[in-house]
Length: 115
Length: 134
Image 1 (cartoon, rainbow over the protein chains, first blue to last red):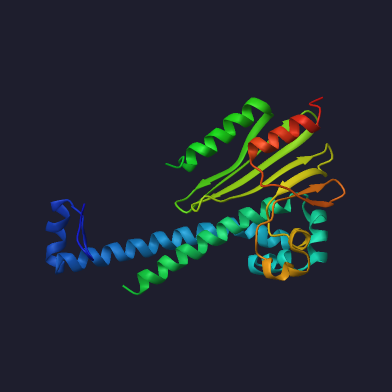
Image 2: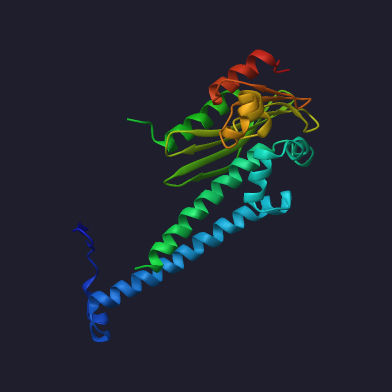
């Protein structure tokens, strides 16, 4: 792999070049293929993260942002959480882990859409 | 150079297996920006739960629990931004610190006490010095 300012050179099997050449400019075709692949993989990752977050949303009956707001501002809400789950802080951290990952992957998707 | 996170998580598991019984990995997820480990074990009649998130900036979000035989909280340590911990630490100025992570401890009555930051070693030290293994 070789990098210049805005481009990275990646070797691809010359057989792919032979196959892609009749479809048009090979660079453009490869760029489009990589973009499609990236969108597909990002979609898979986003779906996986949303699946990981769902049990917490169901257990606490709200999205993470509301849960976070309540934990940091609502003393009565926090006082009652131990009844829902004696180890709610563990859920909180794990949920936060997936939310932060989701935000980063959504940023990547946004960057991709601007290419 | 900082220790790779994967090695740090391996070390925690190895230590846990040396001290606790029936250690069972619940979740482990390593990503470039953060890594998560979550496991359980037993200490005599007590159920022990360990959850750590290692963030790329070097910080660790943690929750360590001792549950009794009926799965009730016996003792817990964590650094979540719990409003009650913020109030205790900052008093009337707590609103300026609502999102800070504040190390604290919960008792079986869910009373909250501020602590120094904990890690797995400190939790094991607390466990071995406060609870007979039975």
